[in-house]
Image (cartoon, rainbow, N blue to C red; front, side, top):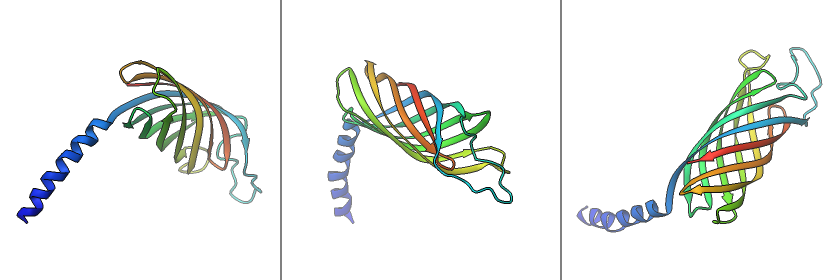
Length: 173
């Protein structure tokens, strides 16, 4: 047992220190605008059908907070929580945020991917929940240190295959 603690101290402590040097914590606040493009799922109305989960031609916004880690100033991985309001319907989203910056320069393009879960309190009792998927391209402008302004355009799919065009502006600190 004494040898275990010696080996643990010898190898674990330096690896934790190395990980702390290459990983940094960051937070992002973002505002996003949604514009409905299409509903990919066509429903055959039956008994108890009260309409699509989100109305066709709906528009709205989302306010998001993302917290996570950054590896080598390029790979960003975090967890996000959002409040959304689409067509006067409130919703909440939880997702994994993955972003890859293509450059370490002050102005850099990036790709993001946000798989997760969305729940909207619509006309159905208790609301409806579903898988959520969003991806897109954007640009990051580093102000100083790890503070950056983000702007992106993407596609989001949620709630019975409703597809939305999204535009997002955020600030990372």
